[in-house]
Image (cartoon, one colour):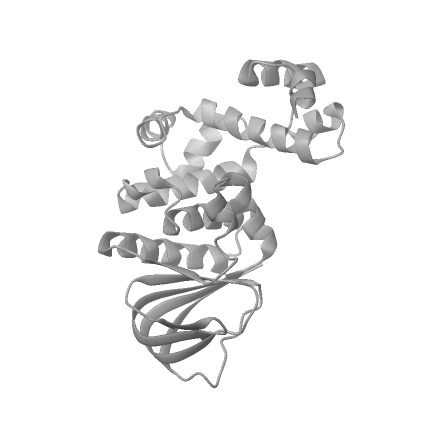
Length: 258
């Protein structure tokens, strides 16, 4: 579903880069030359990150001293689109596009890629990797503006928390579980989340559950009883009450609105 490998060396346009999955990114830390596509040649400038469309061979002509070649499945990209409704997100891989990172963004990007590589090599759960990748894309594309203001350590902590939350929110409601996963006390984690995200752990868990509830109500054929069970509610009435409190309207009213 996802491959991430360091890339370096001298390349000529006679040989295309290989990718197992259709969504492709080239992250150049140090390099010179060109990325060659059917649409034309594009400079391999330092600290440049390319978002490469599904169609077309990727050829390099030049030298990369340090970089990363990332490719991943459409399914993982779909998770990113669920969280980023901005039209820029949908168009990110339609045509070849790139973004030049600031020195600070570049440092953060490579640190996140190093950590993502460790998570992939450790064979982390696919939902964990999907959430990590989604936030990484949001950061590198400049869509998650609040992430840019965080320190590298804070950024890594936010990505790890979101990945853990997305992996376990259906089964785990206990704040202690997430605190242990983050290696923090409940108090320290709550203080951190309130500072960087403006919400408590309990609220973030409920928000994630209700976001999934909305998605299932909108885009699945499951009954309300089935959705209730999927989301870990012992009784449908508890789900209905929680939904009303969260949205301010009933499940029935929400379904009629859409």
